[in-house]
Length: 124
View (cartoon, rainbow, N blue to C red):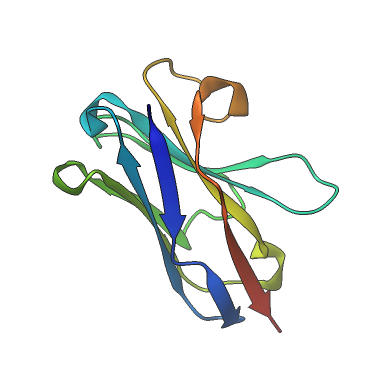
């Protein structure tokens, strides 16, 4: 019943910014902790950022700290990933994910629900 739909991906030059959005439907949004992951061909899906159900806690991969910001708007059932100072190595398919519990926000196994992904391409 839970569906996640990402949007906001696209092509941007290095140093530019993009804002990804993910809308959850089917369940009460505030029940979920939310995460963003990314994947490139031949690589396993890697953790990018996560936010607790309350929004009180956020988590970031070292590679994006200081550049990316995760936030959520429970009234709009939406989680965002603001990406600034983008680098070519940020190029990937970005996936939104949701979990009803647990504290293992860094691992794909924590999340029971996934979006379809949105492509982010950063050119040099």
